[in-house]
Length: 426
View 1 (cartoon, rainbow, N blue to C red):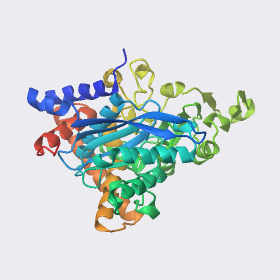
View 2 (tube, one colour):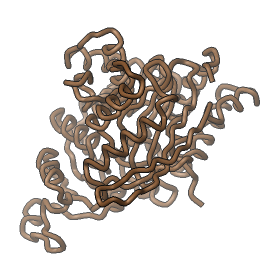
View 3 (cartoon, helix red, strand yellow):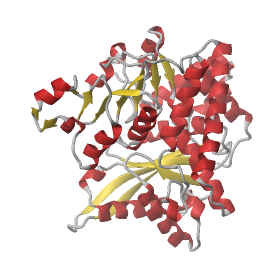
View 4 (spheres, rainbow, N blue to C red):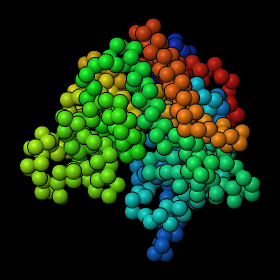
């Protein structure tokens, strides 16, 4: 049976507990969230149909500061997943040393089947339902899967209507013109690459000519990671999304791939129209059209899961042909897969470190909103680089000292900080 997302968190807790020699009381404090809030949103669609949608906000810990975490609109956004993601947010903020706790939200529906007006209705209904539970000094939501800056601005607007006063710091990930931070759109990818390059530098691999990258998931984070890495001299040998992918050993142009995606088409349409592919172009480019599952077996140096959680499993981990896995997605590797990858000598740079650039810049946005300041993109990038490199240094040193994986080291550092903090207000 596949390990659930929250069971995976408990597995990480048990491993870190051995490193830290935690008491049963300490483990119990870290096992469950402070609260799980479940609501039902009733939304009228444009055809007059009223739908009831399950909605969640899980607040895991505020021991180190206000709860912080995104809101996802996804048909599989259930309580177990949201609980796991809220725990990971508490770990993530502690790993990168920002004074936030961890939370997560979700609405269980498929926004792909809803109009823009209907999605706005869902967003505003969510805020009305959870208005008493969130706020700039209590719990600060942000974008996540299938939510974006525009949705955050709708949510901020609705929240301000409910409380009757301006509250720019109540949500992060807003459009820049509406109080968002420069650099937020690329922060997750930028932060991950700062960590990757810090690792390669530490291992003496920065001058390596074999920096072949395969990316599973080509949304905002996947595209931006591909674009930045190519500009840095890496070769993007394969990319995939939910509809399939392309393998081109000589290297893909991320901008060209994204152009196809932006037109609402599959990545495979770089070479194919439906099921009919251009055999000559494929042959000339020495390229192949692949399935979503094929991406895991592509020969590369760095594999980047950048989509949803639980994609590297006990069933496919043995197929991975990479030296390093850079986790940009949340929880992409199951504990069963972790064990296989570790045995095979594949280094995993864990999500709670690698993708923390997004929450780091969310913190910068919150600070700017609170202080009435506006930082330049250069200032944000400078602060992000310092934050991520410092966090990596701590995690790497702990891993070397304890002779454990980077994931176990990151969790041990985070749990130590959470336990050292005074208990938050429940």
